[in-house]
Image (tube, rainbow, N blue to C red; front, side, top):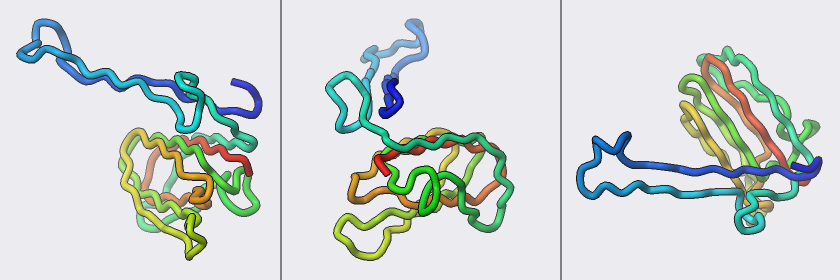
Length: 143
C-alpha cells in the first residue's frame, strides 16, 4: 500500500463447517470483495488523509465524540471507514447530505466488524460512540 492509498481485500465464505457435515446441497458460498471504485481485483483507492486508533471507551449512557474524524481533525471527509468492537456499542454517524440539505444522522448498533464506504458527496463527517469496551477504527478520505 502506498502512502496515498488504502487497500481492502477479503472473502466471505459460508457453508458447512466440514465435509462430514455436508447435507444436500453441499455447496459453499464464496464472495470476494474489495473497495468500491478500485481497479477490478485490486481493492485499492486513493486516500490523501488517514487516521487509525485503538482505544477503550467508557461512555455507557451518553455519546462521546471520537477523535480523528471531522472539522479540525485528521480526516474531515471520510469515504472509507472500518470499525471493530469487542462488545455491543451504539455509534452515531453524521454524514453530509449529497443533495446539499441538512446533515444526515444515523445510529448504528455494532458488535464486531463494520465497514462503510459513503459517497464522496455524502461523506462521514463525525463519529460518536456510546458504550463500554475496546474500539478500533480506521478512516480515510481525500480531505
